[in-house]
Image 1: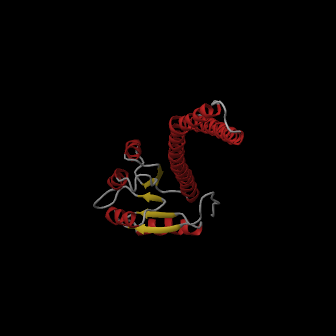
Image 2 (image 1 turned 180 degrees about the horizontal axis):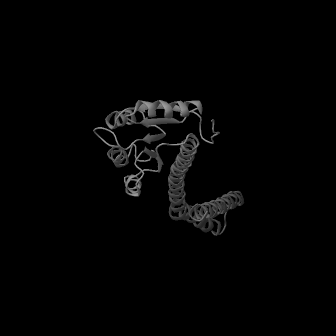
Image 3 (image 1 turned 30 degrees about the vertical axis):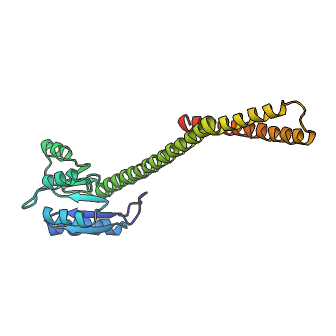
Length: 228
């Protein structure tokens, strides 16, 4: 039976089971539903496969020779590289204690053997959808962090600009304006010189107004950054 999925059909699933018949059955089922499948016959090989290329999901048996499924899952969850990979335990152990232990070591779900095809596909699809949504959230959070860093940098640049204009440029223009005013106030001033001084004073007044507008605009932008 083919089950439609909302996840990418090329999702990579690793099956870990020491029983060849189980590997064949699960892999056939998943391949028929469009999934990419890899297989491992024990825990050690499973960890090697995950280390080489992390899968999107793992179907993991518990009772295996050497390293059991609990130990495999524990190692996966202890690594930052693999801790987010969902693990579905598929086991003949049906005791409540075994299921609780499976979740305690980090399992995302538990399927009891003998399993039904529809149940396995539904649980696989569910975990892949959750993983897809989680990855989207992680990407969005990363983008938000980058955006916040850019905004903080912009805020710092705008604030520095305001400081320079307020405490350096504006006082300089004010001093020039005062000096022109003193020249304009001198008696017996040549009419042509007086006209030039008047024009210069008007230019300085316009520059001061532009600076005030820029400072006000930048302050408003800073406020918008701080309180979007």
